[in-house]
Length: 153
Image (cartoon, rainbow, N blue to C red; front, side, top):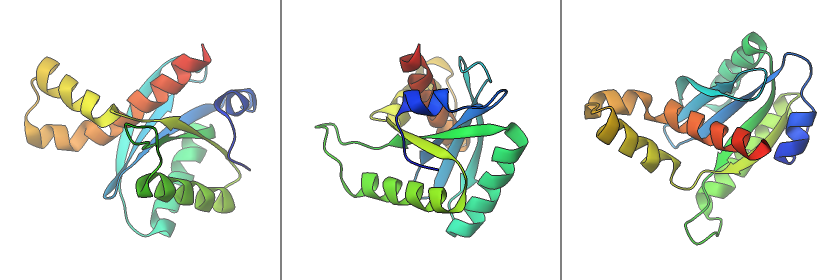
């Protein structure tokens, strides 16, 4: 399909379809899913980054199983609002997904998402470092997706 705006992404969803949020890291991909009403984002799982075709296969299965109609990718914009190499890598990943999947993608500014989740897991959940490492990426994906959903009202 295409890279689109968030509002166009939401209006393009079919009946019963939901959005999938992705937090792309260099080693992992955090995933979160929205409910079909587009109100609540929930952490789903964390994929290990590997060969694109392996990640694509895993994403294809999740998209089919969860009836996903669109993707929201966290865009790692710098604090000063500029886009660096990580943004370009995210945009490249999105273009590769569009070539392989019949799905639309929107970006959401993910500044501070991982650090916000780390603070929550340390300060409020008092979670040990090892356990935090297991959940931070999918929690960051939920944080990104929830921000996108909230912006849509």
